[in-house]
Image (cartoon, rainbow, N blue to C red; front, side):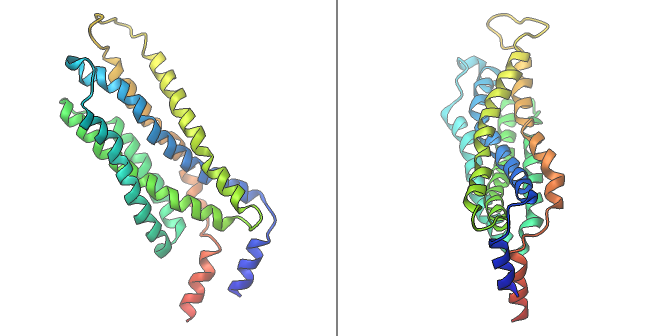
Length: 240
């Protein structure tokens, strides 16, 4: 019976739910790319805000921590959620990774300590959690899309999901330009040698906007059923 179901899924026609799955999974990859590739642009704002006395130059070890720690979290998240997805099901963890990304993006923006060390340490911590969520989203999105797709269009559907990363990178640049242009004309003009206080708001807003696309798709991810390819496998194992 399980074999017949798998053969039926491979030969099924392309339907509406296939494209819906592409959008739901693709928005996760869109958010992943936005969160990862917006930080180099944000570093340009962190320099004038927190390193005004050192010619706006962020020390290399700080830059490495802000950029590298999330990538470490990504590697951990892929291994962790990839295995948990096999054990506990894709659907249950699909919303967990998205929720982790939403809360971590908001946490990055709410790094509201007064001291520079505290702010940057908090930013690195939440970026690490964000990396874990992003890493978990990669294997779950690829697996869910491949298990929903039929044999003829599987490669194209997975490519469509991962192509959303390009749009996420583009969106990070566009959002950064828009936010910076808004804060480029503060109501009170500081002296030329001082950074406007609004610059401290700008980088926070840019990072927190990363939670918006993830939040928009959270509800639909919770409605997604468990993949049909996983269900017969569990049934076969339980019947042995």
